[in-house]
Image (cartoon, rainbow, N blue to C red; front, side):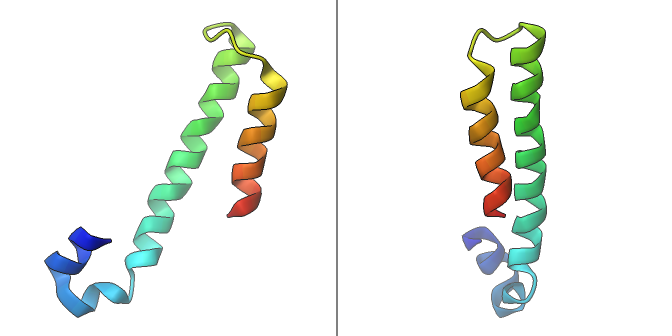
Length: 61
């Protein structure tokens, strides 16, 4: 947000949260890969706690 403000000035206030929202959606979508890695066996964690964590991240948005 700070970089956008210094780059675009007051014009950045209009769409800053929209731009950040797209990045956050991408990051949360990538977090689904954690579940896949556990399911396939690449990562040796328990699936249920990680599933609850990812689910809570999606519910907060």
